[in-house]
Amino acid sequence: MNFSLLISQFGFQNTVSWRIVFFNYNYNIMAKSQATFMKKQLEKNKQKKKQEKQERKQERRENSTGGDLENMMAYVNEFGEIVDTKPENK
View: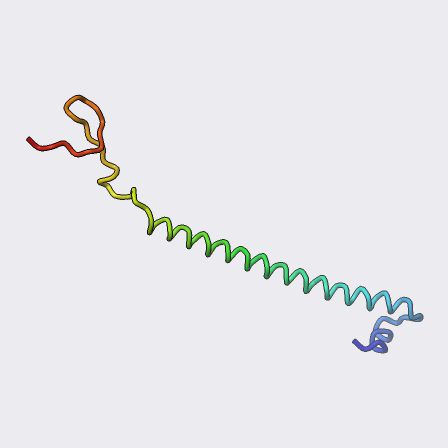
């Protein structure tokens, strides 16, 4: 930014005043860019966690062994006990 333009735009009489405004102007630009950067980083982290969660979910589905109906069945034998083996047909 041009100092003469800054001085004429705000009508400053001394150099101390325009230095303060120039400093605040630069600080606001920096703060804005840092906030944007943080938002982008948070969004990246959120997407990364979501992707990792999806991968873990898919891995659990592929490696599951207890999801079949046959594995969930329980039978009652002739003594009234609950067993997991299918009774023999006589």
